[in-house]
Image 1: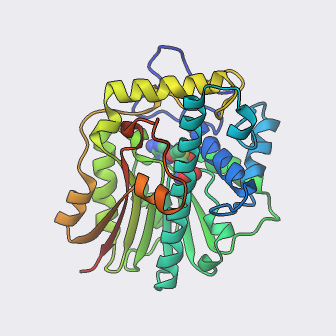
Image 2: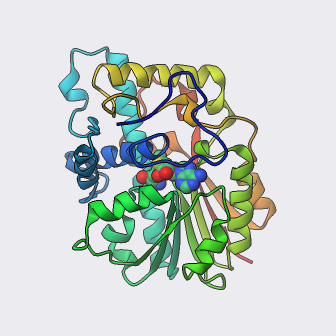
Length: 321
Ligand code: SAM
């Protein structure tokens, strides 16, 4: 069951969640895309564990219907709606593939320490052989990480030395990370996938301050960053209206008594320009618009989908000093 209050304030500065409520359910939405992609012909990646999470959620009474029920099954639906769902699914699958590549490239370049911020149901520490023998620290809310551990079970062994760091990213997570064994003098590869809209702007600012302060020379970072037009009232209204219609017609990831994706889960307000901020602090930055990444992987965005909904970039950075 997803607990989302209709019309009420659903977020506050120190809210917590289980995997099947509020922001936690978006981790299941991402797993649903990965389960769908893994079963597709010519998948961009295979996540053999994604379906486990959906099965474990179903045992708790939450059916996430996205996986396995996609456009080809819904030829009678509004074509624009089908294209929207297909594009958003391709967006999320492309993102996972690009972040996978970042992690593999960092490991091949010799980075041995990885921090996955807002890890959710990410299984890179289990499925990416390049991480064998590396340290991976996964930060997320305690209940989300507990669900993940239980769903994977003791027999599914990570290839990396995986350490859960159960803490809110608006709190003193650097302290918890150090206590968990993080080595500040070692180069680190940081990944923050699908996180920023769920952080208040000031927490986003302090997130990058802290990453910068914890990054030894040779560190790397990847993050999906949303441009101001993505957060515009009209753009969010339109995107969430489509997600809502999709959920009602059985097309989109959906729970039993609520929707996974809710506009009110996002924090709006002015945010730092992440690329400019990193460059000012000496990071070498490259910016890949998500639509270009999608096209390059043969998953182009449908022309009918508003550009605002896809106004995001995959930002990669290296600290050279
Ligand atoms: N990175 C994962 C992936 O791509 O599959 C999960 C993405 S999911 C869209 C968002 C994740 O951010 C959820 O797992 C949620 O619990 C986590 N998250 C959001 N805000 C957080 C916070 N303040 N502290 C810790 N985790 C947070």
